[in-house]
Amino acid sequence: MIDTSTFHYQPTDHEAEKASNSYVMSMIAIMGGLPLPIINLIATFFFYLGNRKGTYYVRWHCTQALLSQLFLIPFNSTGFWWTVSIIFTPETISSKYIAYIITLCIFNLIEFIGTIYTAIVTRKGQHVEWWVIGGLTNLICKA
Amino acid sequence: MKKILLELVLTIAVIVAVWFGLSQVDWMKFFNIQQTTQNTEEKIGDLFWKIMKSTETEITSDSIVAPVDSMLTRICKANSIDRKKIKLHLLRKNEINAFALPGNHLVIYSGLITACENEAELYGVIGHELAHMEKNHVMNKLVKEIGLSVLISMSTGNGNSETIKSAIKQISSSAYDRKLETEADLTAVDYLEKAGINPESFANFLYRLADQTKNLPSQIYWISSHPESKERAEKIIERIKGRNFPKAEVKDSLRFGRLKEKVKE
Image (cartoon, rainbow over all chains, first blue to last red; front, top):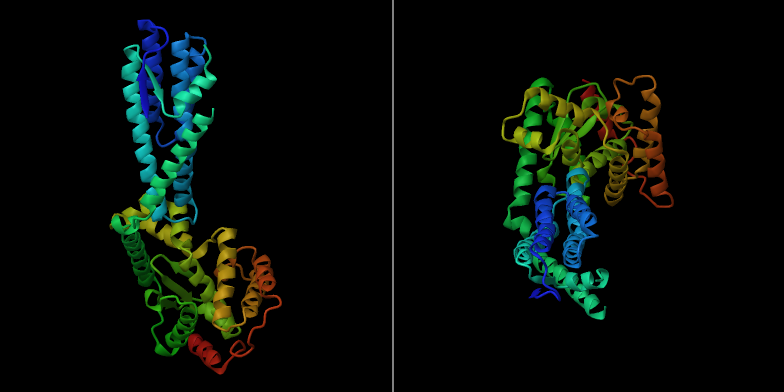
């Protein structure tokens, strides 16, 4: 799921800190944004905007952090609006809904743990590529 | 690119598979949700009815309750609705009104019975209120208008009496939104059809009361709380167009005439 390797150049301590911060930022946004999934995306997006002219290592990790948020947005939004519809419309709570919320919790937790791990590892200057997201980031982020 | 797409599809498939797998568990039973919701609804309904009963006069005479009860039973039986769960209450009040309280309490005012020209009209109103119960409109309306937390505090006995009274007023004299009213009307048409009753009389009842509302607005609660009555009547007519309904038992029967006399006494 998460592939740790060395980057093609050794990032400086300052770069490693900035790259790590992009994951810390998305973690804080997750905690502050619940249950509004769009908040996480907006927060990470602004951090991405602020660092898009940074060094390649910083840009790469900001992009990966942004994409990781983007990936869960449709799933979280569906869960959010499903909940809203249960509260405000004749839609009723069902086993299917509860199963969906549990699924969301599992994958958000995986993402959260992955984010903490990546924040720690990138702070040490190591390179971390996520399953799917890493490949997408390589496509978007050119040196 | 191919590899990324494959990984993406695989990830989404895993998420869907986990959801599907978890859906096989009966979480409602596991978390006892249905029971809790039902308990809350029943407690609120009982509380509302207790307050209503203390301020209104309930009709307990068998000669009045039994015929209405048998009408309710007929619709329930024809539509596989558990009759035992519905608590029928008749109140002596001149207002033309009938409404459903949470916990399957069906309240009908004597004024509504006397305003009906024939049995089928009363069948229509009963069917309409039954539809609100079966489609869970009652609790949804309360949740929307007074909030879930207030309802839960009511069910645990911590409700403010003014809030409870205002909730009863909301449920007895204000409309559901148009979509829910139409859904209840059309469901009532289906109920009547299965029970072998012509729904045209129900539409006529709506038309007639809509006209009378102009003269006696404060007395006709059921219609004033159900806006766009003519439009609703037209939808009912539209729904039944071309269908064949038995004419029997829809005209003013002797039994219904006697019931009206008893109510007026």
